[in-house]
Image (cartoon, rainbow, N blue to C red; front, top):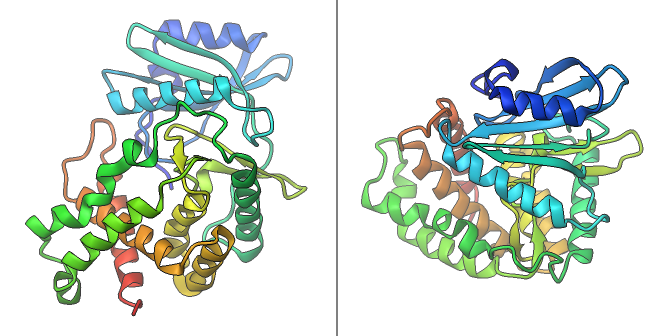
Length: 308
């Protein structure tokens, strides 16, 4: 996923740029933008004259208040993150005059290829299972529950019932009440006390040459059931390469020790979220988000049509 509407280095507050260059430790030789994702905030790899590198994320409340709130969440989480969690460490953070920024260590590796290949997907699912086992109970007990973090996202089908989009197929229109019920069941099944990233997708994952997995982001971290991150990753698997999605979804259920319909219900709930969100006004600074949500929702809906 990519979006050309991110802030550039030159658009950052002069104070943010001065702070970032000071923390880099040597004169900045270059800055390399990274465009993956749909947040409007700046994402830059900074390179110093001594070879030191840092990864910068920055946004202003004026640009998008939700992004700023999420960056603050990531800062709070990374400050308290156990060293055994596979994620780049926080170097420093900035929160002044409506600007929030964080500098993290540069992760080693590359993003997985899309559509997901079996080897890379297996590596990530194994890493998520290992992390969930160690991160239960959640080592950050102050984090919100999944219901507090994104509970309203599970009500997409309920909202769609009130005003169905014109392109909704007849088979789905007839089953919207069922999908709303299954979404409510999904939220209950997702409750738990495991550290949950909640946004695992290809651009938030790095794979190194040894096959080690590193998770980036952490802007939406919460407490949830041990299988939720793997379950949510299936959204991208279905959207970008659905032909073998059923086998991978079955594996998520088996690895998590839950019935297959729990994972199906989560994916059905998120389908409602994407379709409902696609019809809304784009958030500030994110003009392409709704088109992405519409494409994703329609791909997920096609997958739903294959279920019994």
